Length: 260
Ligand code: GCO
Image (cartoon, rainbow, N blue to C red):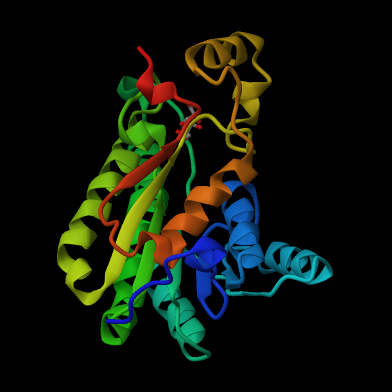
């Protein structure tokens, strides 16, 4: 097996790599897609809305960045198969970022089965469905990187987020399950666990003075994260710098999980 470069920026250079980022038309997925592109990757954007993806692709082009887009529903088995077949027909997927995530907050005793299933399907099952279609080509080429957008809620919860915490906890264990099956094929599967970041998903929380004060008090860094602050972990896990890292979750949380 070829040895990774051992110095400087070459360790983190993604030139010649093709990265599919699910849920990348906005939020953390868009920030990571932009960061991987700036590190040299050819990015394939994904979401369900082709128009939104077209707009983002045009913005990438205006910034001199390389991107294409592939609209498909990551929760629908047939849509995933067709979407991935279409992508693989035009080249390999070297890096897969399973980033799609939704929230549907409710106290568990009042949560409907629809609310439960929707969050599990988007946040957990989608990673299985997409990885199951992409991994065989990585295994065949004996090279690949799979990155899951986990969460600090892969470790801890708070009232009304039981479905989300269960999904993100499951995603941490799916990361490990894939690592123990696919590491021998030189495929590395790891996770990134964001803490509290300012995105569309958390806007209602940021704008709630009491919740905002609580988060800034609970987080040792004393502030919310900004989406671009995930790029370093994403580039690390997508690059040769992480070739001997597997089954891990890197928490990017301002120290929140380190504090009582
Ligand atoms: C909430 C938040 C959290 C975080 C997310 C970060 O409702 O408490 O949305 O779920 O945003 O987990 O990883």
